[in-house]
Amino acid sequence: MESSQSHDVVTFALDAQVEYDPCKPLFIDPQEPSRSLNATQFRFLVHTLIAGLKAHGLGRGDCVLLHSGNNVLYTALFLAIIGAGGVYMGSNPHSQLQELNHTVSLTHPKWIITEPEGLATVLAIADKHKLADDHVLLLDNTTLTETIRFVHDPSVPPSPPPQTTDKSTLLALLSHGTSPPLPIPDAATAASTPAALYSTSGTTGLPKAAVLSHGSLMAQHASIAHSPPYPVTRLISLPIFHLFSSLWTHLFPIRYGEPLYLQREFQLLLFLSTVHRYQITETYLVPAMVHMLNQAPATLEAKSRLSSLRYIGVAGAPIDRASMSAFQDMLHPDACAGQVWGMTECGVVFQQRYPTNGRQGQGDLGSIGPVTAGCEARLVSGAEVVKDDEVPGQLYVRGACLFTGYLGRNESVVDAEGWFDTGDVAYVKNGEYFIVGRTKELIKVRGYQVCPAEIEAVLLQHPLIADVAVIGTCLSDGSSEAPRAYVVRAAAPGARLGSDEVYDFARQRLAAYKALDGGVFFVERIPRTVSGKIQRGKLASMNERRDALAGLLARFKAKDVGGVRGRASVMV
Image (tube, rainbow, N blue to C red; front, side, top):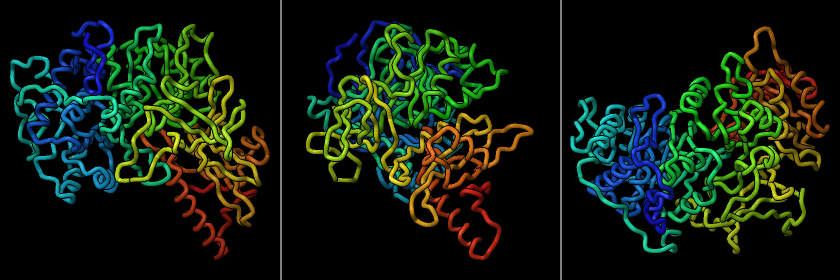
């Protein structure tokens, strides 16, 4: 076990904090469990990749874009990029040309490592941005297999893959020996030295790149590190190019000897079978996944297949108490589900952890929990700091976990006292925090503030609603905003959900000013980010186009799409 005193995040990650078997697999592909890395192999691979990146000219501060989905090499690449002095940036391998162009224009990577699925898009973008051909490395299935074989037996050099493309592969980095991570001399330097860029959610506009320093990443880990009363075996099926899932992926396995199974993506049946097969005890989900599990047909035997789980953290978007309670009821009596709140800009600041005495000590399932270690929070209403329970205010957070800023932007991201405005409205009760909603998303109805998430939570209780998003729309007379619901019908043979039924369902369960007087519209899908957040910017644009079309039709006296009380049943 090495010393835990380190100022760079790579040495910090590789510092084992407990004694464990170094030959035990830690990073495992559940589809092909022979694709795995134990602690010894993982450390060797990180040091090998650091040497390879240095040999290929990666300099301090150079960005490397990892255009890849989840795989067992991802964390080694993440740490090697940072350890060689570079700055990591991840992106969705399914990004369209315009999306990837925005990422590259923002971050100016010197290298791009890509999967075959994204190669054509990457090459087009690389050409546009004058990135040298040999600075695009391919991570295909053959390369992944050969890399794992090499670290399992370094005495046999990696074999070059068949020449199916003129692109170099990741294997080019494996023939330069090993090298330790570049050191960082002190905590002050760690706090100011960029280590990673993470894309913000982009729910209301183009994503920004949040800059996280070595110090930020270590503080974010420290805020969530604890020793639960059960042996930890994790399953991650969320994309690890997002910060939330990466927090549980990159450091915990190697620091604590906790096996991690990495799924490529969340698929309901595959998720259930993986949890059961490997007796997973801990996982992290977004609300959309929880709703899928709650609605799983009895034939999938979800309850029995999830029986090994002991803790499930839920984050990424709002979720109501009823849905959390229904989900927890599916689990073993010793298992707890808890909400987690965080942002790309600050990591996890609130978490309902596994209580020391199980469910008996569990907090309110509707809350995001208390503040995590090393972080601070305060609520502000107007110019005053909120002191009392159950009084909503603008949520500010502070701590070493905060990012240093947005790449390419010089404005300060914190106030004079170091507080960061999260954009959320919240209240506290008995030490637990509850999210009311996003400030920008609150709907102003005749002087009242209406939270879309509250209406969405109610509508999702309807058995014929698979998904829903609520936004504010201006009434035709301009007197006020009103909630409008976009609804995805659940597949139900012989049943056809109508707009009147949706309107009445909400009206019977909510105050009158929260009624869906802006209309009910049925759509094929709700635009969401890969982490489950509703892309309200896209939804608002869709809403504007729908209203423009409705106005045009009304002008020409076509059929009325407004419906009674603003309701309609058109597909958009």
